[in-house]
Image (tube, rainbow, N blue to C red; front, side):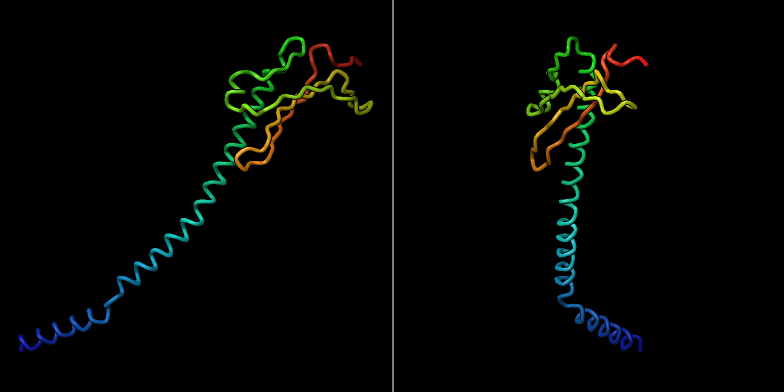
Length: 140
């Protein structure tokens, strides 16, 4: 009786395997589809994050450079070597800011702007700072 029971069990086990033929190929196809979909979604997301970090890095370094330019003697505004090595296409603009009204007199104010044209698919970017040179404010 044990032999018959073992034979029946063996037969059932072989029937179970017969029903799973080709299932490994189907599982591999589904896994490949899921992996491809995830790759197509993650690639552009990582690229966008890297571009955003590059824009943020430019903005931070531009503020540092503008802070250094505020202290330049005689109004000579030239980008420093370390900034030009990193961003050779950047330009510095220095312009006087006109007075807006009596409430906020802006006489003597200077606007410094660092502009960077579009690079590597990134849109053009500019960072500005307005400051009053020493003794440039009106006394009330």
